[in-house]
Image (cartoon, rainbow, N blue to C red):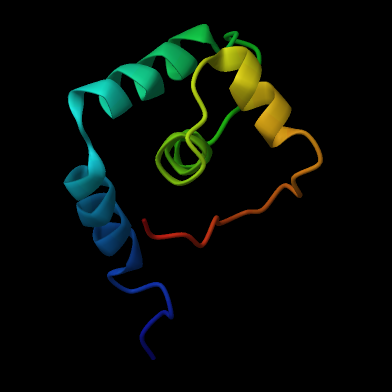
Length: 78
């Protein structure tokens, strides 16, 4: 029986890649580089915050993340 996620992650990666502009790439990298080593953040959360919700900067990302339920798999495709 095939997994319900078969091909899902590839579709997400393709959709994210299609949305990347130099400005969005820069925002994603700035947030990822600002995350302290001892803190766990899912990359997909950063992409979602920046691409979908227009978040810019680490402080904005941490505010965006507050109150969001921790999920094993974030089901979102831009």
